[in-house]
Image (cartoon, rainbow, N blue to C red; front, side, top):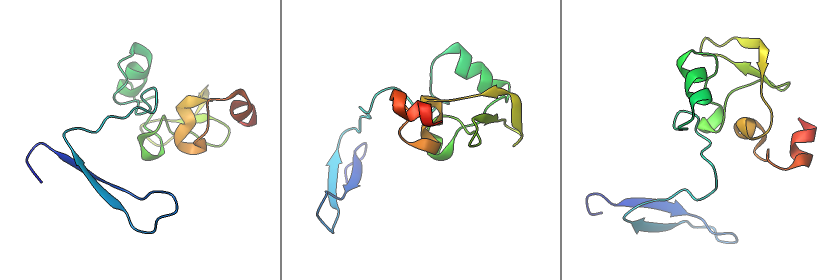
Length: 104
């Protein structure tokens, strides 16, 4: 593979073997940024810097328990800081529709 290129493996629905795709770049076009370490907003940045939150599973949103209590950088669940909706995408996967958030 030439320098500077990326390669991904994709297994299409109904196929058993993955296909290799090589290109110059990989663009995430799934919507807003879910890795809060890369979000360029003051609130998420300060919550991370102050250790009040930590990245969620697979770096999708932030870590929290099933009730939404946010997990801080020291592994302690907050009694005051809770999350719901898109910040919990790493836990719930679908967290944007009203019906998804209502379940949380």
